[in-house]
Image 1 (cartoon, rainbow, N blue to C red):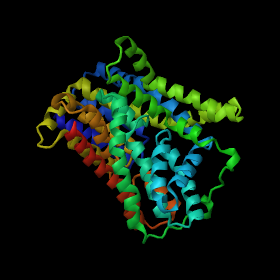
Image 2 (spheres, rainbow, N blue to C red; image 1 turned 30 degrees about the horizontal axis):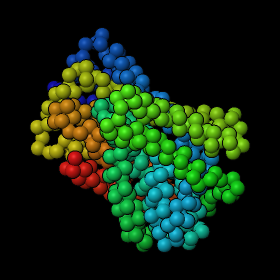
Image 3 (tube, rainbow, N blue to C red; image 1 turned 180 degrees about the horizontal axis):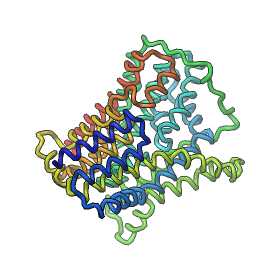
Image 4 (cartoon, one colour; image 1 turned 90 degrees about the vertical axis):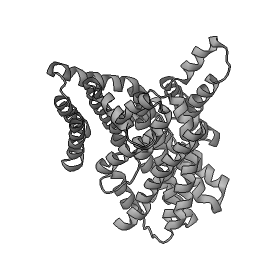
Length: 436
């Protein structure tokens, strides 16, 4: 009955979102209620479990995700993203435009949430296409692979950040491991794979031909890179220092500086000054942009909250531990199991964020039972959540319409790129696990 209850609850979640188009937060709450009833949780404990699950999840993540959304908005609106793209193209030259665009997508994708990054960066892709007279696929796929990898693997993006909290992983270590597996994945799924797409003729609409900021309106190169990468430098630096023989009295300060909330707040304040106020942008205009960013991220926060409710029902009913024991008996490496669960939910639901968060509630017990590295489990689940983007994923249709390609060509390019990212991500996670 336990396994039946879990399968039915997850199946109901999939049906509500994928078939009936119910808003994901509502779908999660309904599924959590059904799971609680099927798993025998006493009626008087059900509301408390749902409320506690929502509160615990958002309590750890809301500040980081909201500050991250504001920071990404600043990077986009200030022109820092455009400056980074121009600088990398100049550095690598016209012969290595795909590599430059892949690195641009990755660097800019760290502070920018995926949907925002897509809308902001695709016009820059078309700008390069028009200027360099290169095939859109050769320029676009590397850029979008960089965005996708950052979205699936790296904090402060919502799904990896939430997975770090659920698995008890370390934000800094996960970020460092994520960068290690991201670079080879990016090179293969981006510049290398894009060379196989020369036969696809994309016809981007003139509607998307960008109006770029002029040179005097853009921030400086150092300023742009320094601000965009500041969260990575602070979190990664604090984590690296923590592994050295530092004075014990200095450890609390290092941990404070490397705390994700402090990192994102400091990054936002530094960016607001150097990319905003110091360049003549009125404070009121910055605050209006930040308000817009909060409105844009509200839906993701609700999805995370709903996932927390379902997870807490699994924990309070005891099925969490039982599921972990059952999965541990399957003759597969736990990292592969986590990847497979996220993969299956991704194919059914379409949303990488929902797939990752739903899978987390199912596979979390594997970490304690098997002793697998929690940081690597974050990355394995993140890789699975990116697999096989198809017609139930909004990004699939955004790519098709922006690039004006056929349905078959979208599968051949976009879906294959996402599948390569997810597959290679798992391969390099397993390689890293073997090396540790």
